[in-house]
Image (cartoon, rainbow, N blue to C red; front, top):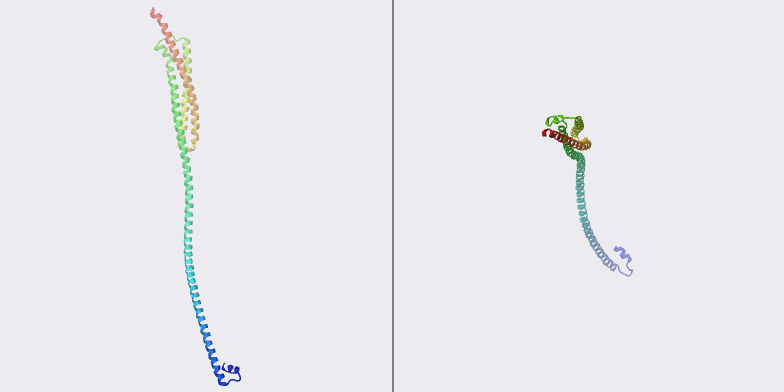
Length: 267
């Protein structure tokens, strides 16, 4: 460096002056270098400080991010594990729900079948009450037919006209008594046949009781019983009419017998 400075000095300067000037110049250069190095070191220190701050900030951010990531991973793992548990639970619940649904359908079917049985039982009881009423009515009607026919029996008996009040049984009287007797026997037989038929209906009807599958047949028996009740209505009227006719005949014969007896008493 000094040789270079000496080479560049003016020619009119002495070597001593030139050497002195060179040393001063070298000293200035050294001072300048120190200044530049010091400034460079300050910049480097500042830059290192900034880098440290930046690294600290990024480190904190990284730590936060790492912490969040770790928390997120743990949370996700736990959530995934819980989700798997929930999925297993959900499958179990779905299976239980399916089973309950099947059980519910089975119960509904059983309940529906039981309801049908109950409804048929109610219908059966309704038929039973209806038939019982008609049965009692039928027996009352039969009795209402038999009673006047039993009374007719007295008025058409020959013993009535020969023992209770003796009269001459003319051919006309005998014909009349036979007519009433024939009519009575016909009515009695008709009522008896209906009585037997109704007893048969009753046996058949009560054989359907507690047999739900035959419940519809019960209505058929009731309808047939209604038909026989209508016949009994007609027979009851005929029996009452026959009784009135036989009683009138008996009264007329009694009155005639009394008239025939008067002349003998007067004599």
